[in-house]
Length: 119
Image (cartoon, rainbow, N blue to C red):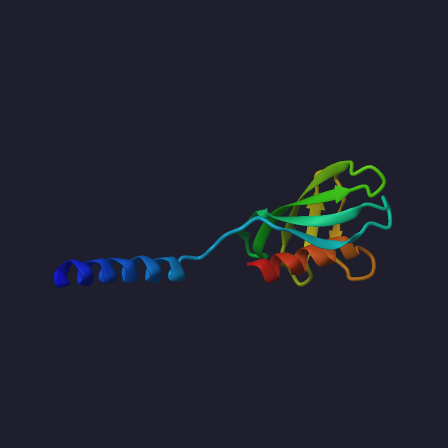
């Protein structure tokens, strides 16, 4: 009986230690601002973030922006690619591209830094 209890406790300890060491991934929509252009609330969808090295510019990041219209909850999505250069550069699925800037492109700026924080 003593051996059975010890074996059960050892098994439980292994399960608990494996669970504690396993990273927990979860989907989250991170608010990155309200668009001055569309008036929509914008959220970075963390489950869509992908990072990879494509060139000498550093890491590239793909991510989706969810844009929600407050009046009726209508949702639109934009797909972004960012890459590190001397300054974070981006382009999106609507053909808009440029340097992410805190004042000129605050949504993209906040997206880039939210991606950095998430990774």
